[in-house]
Image 1: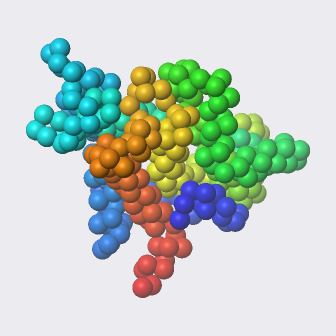
Image 2: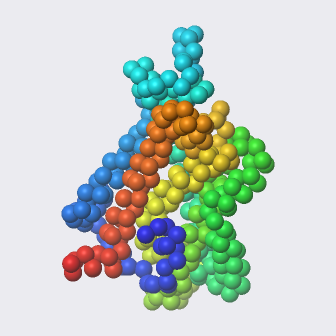
Image 3: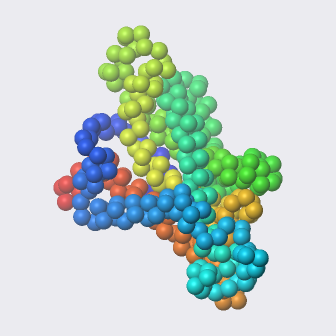
Length: 320
């Protein structure tokens, strides 16, 4: 199940909040069984390797992401994998391993920025629309549905062009890419939070808060917010995978991050197209494998979390 599919779920009441004792990670693993636990652990390992590579990229990478020489000697262009260059070199003489590692840092930064911006924008708007209703709800729903109707990559391209002013190097390229991906995610968070807010705003505890004279802001963010965000961890994890693919798509099509500003896997795949016909496989395989592994890890964790937090799936598994 994708994040977009979760955003389309009907207005069902959220599951009751369950207090977990002990270390959250251990409690999460204990709530899984069999193949589900294996996929969760494997996904967490892939994500951990991705985060470690991103955070410690300057220490792990043998060279800089745009470095094409060392000790005054230029690297051989399109050199096959060797002891000196484990993943070979690109057509520009850059070390492919270094670009793959620094590409993880770029991807992590864009994912973090886009998800934080999406939550900051989408969650409050969903609360406001679901709780206030009336014309505010109609306007916001119409606007979000219009954004949701666009294909995600097309919407990201349009926003990227608008934000960067036609120049992908604006804002260092990273911020413009993050904003472009944010535009894809905001409608999803808005719809999930709005639907859950509509379902719970007539609950007794909300009515009690109104009777005691609590303000609208206090009711939304103290009494409702904690009870409508149960599915957000799942959506965040799945959106992380979608952000990787969208960023790679932007870079592949030439609307991503300027190569002199940061390493980016999609851009490297684009430049590797001409190498395939010449039998030079390493310039495209390694960035592609990095994308596949990171997306796989986030998808496995997202699906496992969905089974843990979704009471319907949990009940079905218990019956089986």
